[in-house]
Length: 225
Image (cartoon, rainbow, N blue to C red; front, side, top):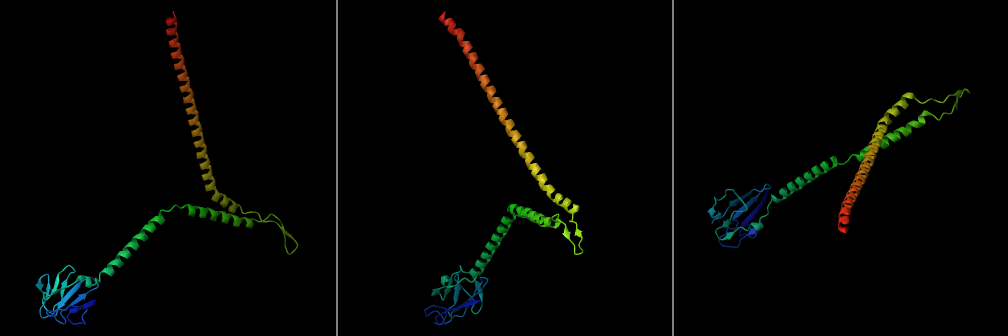
């Protein structure tokens, strides 16, 4: 809470130089919540919107109220700081920050998963490459007792499991190839139909031209006769 003293005394926060003003005329209490209280300690009184207030009794006022001291001086609200402005700014900043965080979360959740998919496929390739050396190079190795150790055969279960892992990818590739072939066939068929319609239109136009020409020939003959 901030206290502002008002009066004729030079030690007051707001000095009002008038003989009707008491040395310590009134006190303003500014609370952090924005609440403002005034206490009158004068002889000639303090007036809020034209009404004299009770002395030595805190009274809640607002920044829009007209405050008069002994009808000689009025309170200049521009000299009174607003303690609630700082909390309001903090609330606004926190609200804006929370909105930005929410928007960022929404944007991240809607990003395409292409990078994660490619990372997963790379992980599969690395896994397969690391398993291959364990199958052996097919060469026999010598034991300490002089006998020859046969090369280890690849585990059939591991091979089948790798086939199972790769099967979905091959199905996807086959499906893509099938759709691509179907699209090529549709485009080819469409072009053939367009060429056929064009030929039919040209043939029709040619027939109409020949018919018109044949129709004009008898007319010319009758004219010459």
